[in-house]
Length: 202
Image (cartoon, rainbow, N blue to C red; front, side):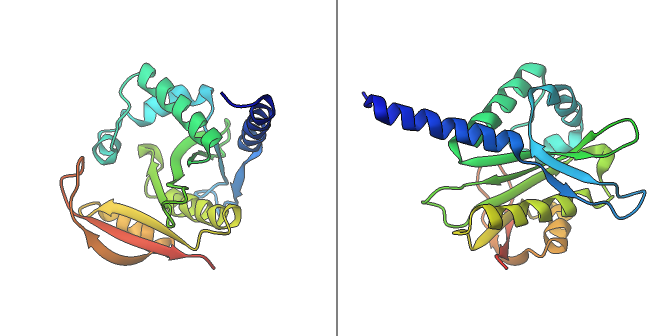
């Protein structure tokens, strides 16, 4: 069993991480009426309904490793994202678009693989069906990438991976400055080969 002093340090560290998670919000200014401001922030429990709505889209379910199909799965996913923030291993952001009647969920972006054993973390994302084709994903991925390099100065490069037939993700990678590096062999649960793109710090 850990000593009381060690437990106190662990508790303080956990509180600091929780406070950091609650305070983080990345803003992406809009450029026109069709590209309003975006806000990236950690997921909240009250995002459940919007998350479930996004996953009703068959296109999203096709490209997602673990589709969410009911409220219970969404609650479990939201709980995991909070735990991942606390652990410092994975950082998922809900992407919200400013609209006249309030912010609306339009995407998810995630930085994953922040471990000493993985020198190159990976950026992932998905876009809700109602927000596709308006440049949401490139703007959100770019904001996440900048935050990652600022937050983790030891990270010199980011990966973005996608299946070879996901042409939209290939375009997003290119728009965000990620350079194609190689074709990766298929591995479960993805049936086809993949592309690896990288973005260097600076």
